[in-house]
Image (cartoon, rainbow, N blue to C red):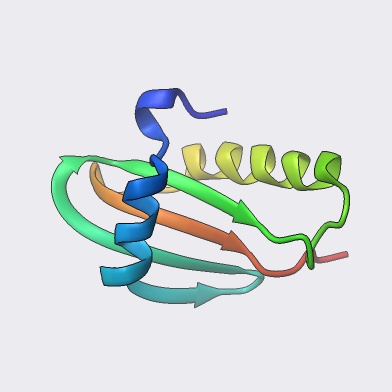
Length: 87
């Protein structure tokens, strides 16, 4: 799990969704907004992907864990969407 300092707040998520650029890779979609501030990340898992909140939380934790291994920039804001689960 990411520390609170590394996670986006609700208002920042709205800004990224409104003004950010998007990209897609496999079962993931990402919106990012380049600003000169430390990197902050949010992960969104829809009820269409996992109906139970336990499953959504598990997917969210796995996505947060996966982001620690990625070569991400040190600045900016990213919202990561999990679109579907691969079997």
